[in-house]
Image 1 (cartoon, rainbow, N blue to C red):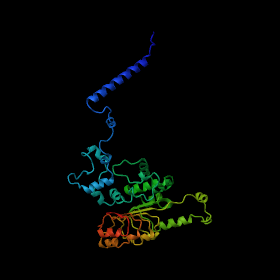
Image 2 (image 1 turned 30 degrees about the horizontal axis):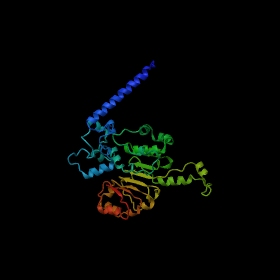
Image 3 (image 1 turned 180 degrees about the vertical axis):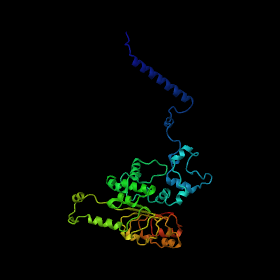
Image 4 (image 1 turned 120 degrees about the vertical axis):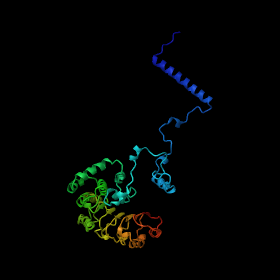
Length: 365
């Protein structure tokens, strides 16, 4: 009987199968001699997984603050206590944000001091009027961090365009990017009065936020009154409330957004608190040169959840401390964060702020 000849491909497959079976039998035999399981655990085949827990390598901010409070820096004063292992190489130190020098904080006209003073208002947790998908763009750029393409483009527009040119191109910039441009300029190169008016436009703010940094700019005394009157004059008389429909509102255009965040830094308060819109939830009054009467603030802005009164020289003396102790904090029912940096915060003041509240106010001092 004649055998059927086999092709070379089938012969090579048979040889490979025989060799694979022999290797498998040899491996299992050697494992039996060592008295270990024949099957290898899966993690031994994976070489790209971290050997330490991810929470130990990259701890959260809450854990790092807890560890810093529990274990003071006694043995390693220049090294964070939560870092695992030895100090990083010198080439890696540029990736971390350098600390602000005390000399830079002494100059109130330096970008470092402005960034420190506006840190509470520009905090990512303070999303007074967030836009969809812009939370990463609205936060302030950390030192040593590479800026985004949008921020680079806005920086070029800010440096190359005058106030009148900004007014021309402002309709082509989305509102949330105008807000980013206003925040970026407030820290690095404060806007002049003409540039601020160009970015804010007819609405008087950028995406619900208004940031004024002095002495380069200051609000007019009738700023909010003019905005209120322009809104009322923009509504046609023949369109009554009863006759308004969804189609008519769409034909008139989108309703202008309300002001949610007002930030004043090193600029005088030139308007009355009664002119403020009641929609404000974030009010920042930092380094205001003249005293401000805030007794009736809860009546005009009852929705304030963040109030920053840091670094005001008129609150440092004994009269200022008495003003803080006698302030009607209970009327600010929605207050969650209170900035009192630069003052002496006593336990009596904390009890006055948190009186009658279910959740304590986060006082930053």
